[in-house]
Image (cartoon, rainbow, N blue to C red):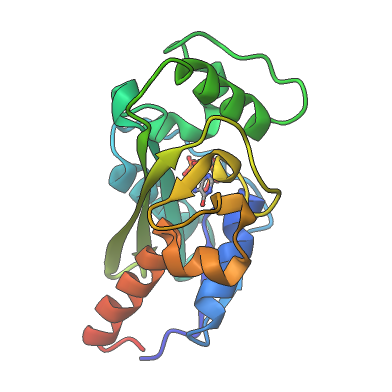
Length: 204
Ligand code: ITT
């Protein structure tokens, strides 16, 4: 069976844009749900959260569903923002940050505040994907190592991209072209890993 279309189990516009591009390369059409199921990401792992999202959208739509749970892991912050990346501004760890413009902006301000005096600036973007086919499923992972910058740079991408500089690059993730980000990013790697897995399972 060839996988031609998937439903993206996400409400994040930045992820949707990247997923459409990454999957399009493999001839897979990515569809967006017409409602936000507001899934409680109650688990303590990226993989389980991705599974919970993929399962909820599968149950609602009964279509091949692809979920992404991702985030920025900073060792000097004990692994935070981690699975709390999307709402780090409102998390008790490190104190809450006021949303003045956007949530992404508040998240960035909080990480920069917590990292102000910190020498060890290593960080890793992590993405776990779960493809739910109802009768079976697949999962994959992608990582991108880098460092946290001292101030935001660039306007591309989304989320923490302006303060993350991938290993081997002189630019922040938000200064890369979409194609450059796809080559390096956790999501790009996770999609390519998923594609090689489902190819071996006879799905592409
Ligand atoms: P869905 O659950 O609806 O998919 P979400 O944004 O809540 O949307 P997550 O719980 O997986 O998704 O949180 C991911 C967060 O991690 C995201 O909101 C960003 O803050 C950050 N993030 C993930 N991938 C990123 C990327 O490529 N660039 C920058 N930040 C990223």
